[in-house]
Image 1 (cartoon, rainbow, N blue to C red):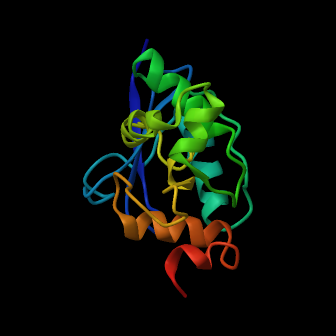
Image 2: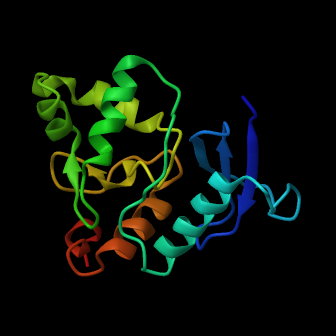
Length: 164
């Protein structure tokens, strides 16, 4: 198994994409300048991932079609699978994810912890999870990025989250 990675620019700053030759294992926000780490790759998977992410940011891609292999616990993998089912421009609460998994409403905190550990940002849309009160809460990459992603996907429908 060959691990390869590439940096790409985005409206939210540099993203590091990592794959294992068969699937994408990580998409993370980084503070490294794109010029500091390789920004080109021959890996077809990473080329396609970058193409789809670029398409997402210009409004042409609403669903990602990439093989994914996030690394996590069995519970985290189940949560991340539920996240992939949240449609573009939609939001869901931590409690709703817990309920979809057949868990008690009090399990929302565990879902939140798994959500925060998601290694494949944007493509596994953890940014679409909001608080039970319908408000914008927690995002490992920071609330400004979460706000940007939600507004990017649905500028009108998401305004109630931002109080404007």
